[in-house]
Amino acid sequence: MRKALTAVALAAALVVPADARLQDRKNNASREGVEALEAGVEAMKASDFQKAVDEFSRAIEIGGMNEQNEKAAHLNRGIAYAQLKQCPKAIPDFDKALEVGGEDALAYIQRGQCQSDIGQVQLAVADLKKAVAMTPDDPAYAKLYCAIAFNGKVYAEAGPACENVVVRFEPQNAQLTQASAQSYDAAGNKAKAKEMWTKLLALDPSSEAAKQGIKKNS
Image (cartoon, rainbow, N blue to C red; front, side, top):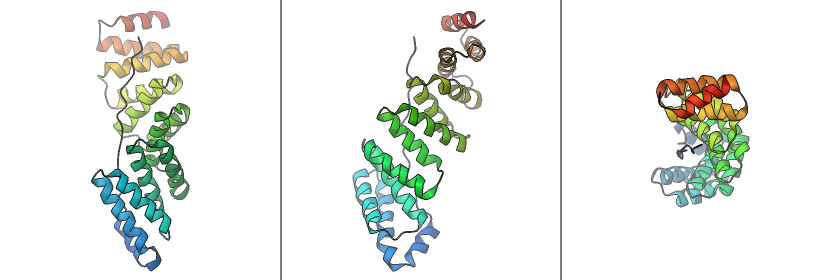
């Protein structure tokens, strides 16, 4: 029987670099906005996400910040909205952060997680795939990609995504090995399915699923 994988929610605050703050403070028109941005970051650190939303919103309304700080305001507000379980409000902020600041793994992973939460699985998987490609050494991102693709039944992506976690980070993880094998099976990739079922049998010689999977794909 196919069992859902646990997808652990990710949360992080993008702290504004000091040089960016100093650059903006040279412009009196932007100083108040930067101070609101900094207050939002402090609220994020304290897990006061509603206050963070309010401060980042104030910074965005004031405007006049440099590109780096404008991106930070939208990205952090999106993360705060996501923590408040308000993904429909968060996603436009992640869109804006990517528009202003370009490719960003954190923006992709956070937007992808929100898209998954509201049932936009294909969009979620596409974003998570980009984030993992940009940060291949991050096991948390890789596991989230595997879990969301598998739970969302996007098997063509889940097979290699879960295999990647097993090969690179958790070679003894029978659950993810089985998820990869099941996904390859569902996607019709007999060779890879047999390979992963064989790995599962090596990890768990009593696994009937592995034995049946090997027989089915031989």
